[in-house]
Image 1 (cartoon, one colour):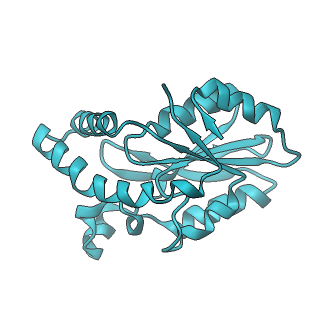
Image 2 (tube, helix red, strand yellow):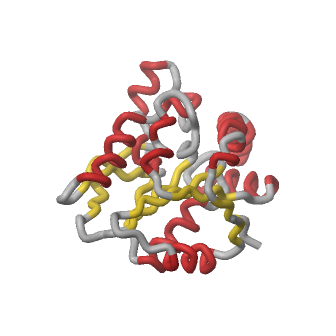
Length: 203
């Protein structure tokens, strides 16, 4: 199903209530607008928000592994920890703690997100929710529905460059990262779109 507004997505989710906690995924390429859409949905639905970015491996570990210059690639995340959190959201009768991500210093902050047991909807947003391989294949099975965000490539690139500059990169560094590591990751993510249940393409 194709949705063209956040309100339409919220209406769909309201009409398809579930007797158990729902865990919904918002996937898409870097700069697609996942965070903005997920936050808007969470506000409308009274849902908890769980960004995948909190599962970035520490920069020091990425340096040791030789992956620092590819930060954001599938193998630069704590996939097992992410999967365990999703599983805990399914079975836990108490609060579930999760990390957030500080974009200024590019480090995760442990246990800064707390999802209380009375929360009946959790919105998970991230790049690799539909990736099949490297441990990511378990994620989709823990989500009730996944929405893939599509956006014009030029708009997406502009957003990425602007974001990188905002968080401290020079214009040259921002463009190089957006066209380098970000674009390599985007190609992987783009290929996962057919696995989504729905598409979001905002006008």
